[in-house]
Amino acid sequence: MTSVKHRPQTNALIATLKRQLKASGKTYQDIASLLGLSEASIKRLFREGDLSLPRLEIICDGIGLELSELFQLMAHQRQQLQGLSREQEQQIVDDQVLLLVAICCVNGYKFQEILDQYTLEQTTLISKLAALDRLKIIELLPNNRIKLCIAPNFNWLANGPIQNFFHSRIKEEFFQASFAKSFDKLLVANGLIANSSNAELQKRMQKLINEFTEHSRKDAALEMGERHGTMMVVAMRQWQPSLFKGHVKKAPCR
Image (tube, rainbow, N blue to C red; front, top):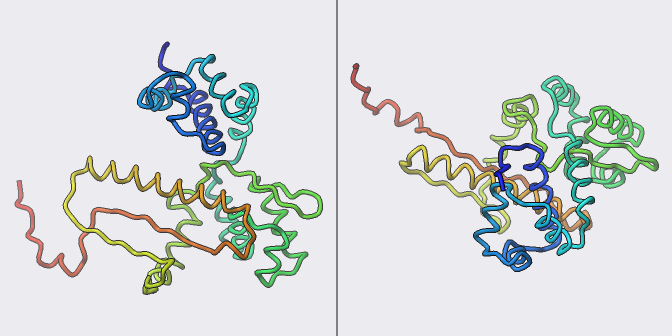
C-alpha cells in the first residue's frame, strides 16, 4: 500500500483514532493482537499513516466504534478552533476580565464555578462569555452552559499577545517560589549538547506538555474542589549567564 504519511486528511484521521484508543484504554499491544502483527509494526503503521480500510474497521470494532463514527469525529475535530489571530488575541489581552474568563473556559470551568471563585457579576460574566462565543472559543448554550469549541491542539500564538502578556507579568512571580512543597518541582540541567540532541529533547518536551493537557482534560470530570490551578513551564535554550560573558574569549577573526 502506498504510504500516505504526507496527506493531511490521513494525519487527522490517525490523530483522531489515537485519541479514541487512549480514551478506551487500548494500547499498541492490544491493536497488535487484534491485527495479528507485532507492536513495532503497529507503531510504524500509525507513524506512517499506512492503515488500510479493513484494518481501520478491525481497530474500530475493537473499541466499539463504527468506521463512519471515526470519520465524523475527525470532521468535527477539524472544524474546531486551533488558534486565534493576533488581533483576536490582542482583543482578549486588552480586557483582563475577558482574559480571566477565557482562561477559565479553556480550563473547563462551568458558569457557576467561575462565579463561585471570582468576584464577577453574573451580567458581566454573561457578556464576556458572549464575546468568547463570537470568537468561536466557546458556544454559549441555554441556561449559561459553556461548550468549549477549541481543538485538542489549540495553542496561543507563539510570541503573540497572550504569550507575551504572561511572559511579562507572570514569569518573575512564578519563579519567586521556593518550589519546596510536595506538589512543586523545579529541575535545572546544564551541559553541552549537539543540535540533534536539542531537537530530540524538544520533541520530548512537547510530549510532556501534551500529557499535561491530557491530564487536565481527564481531570475535568472531577469536582472543582479536587482540582488545583497548576502551571507547568518546560523550557530549553542555548544560553550562558550574563555574569560569565565578560570572561568568554572572543572568537578569532577569519
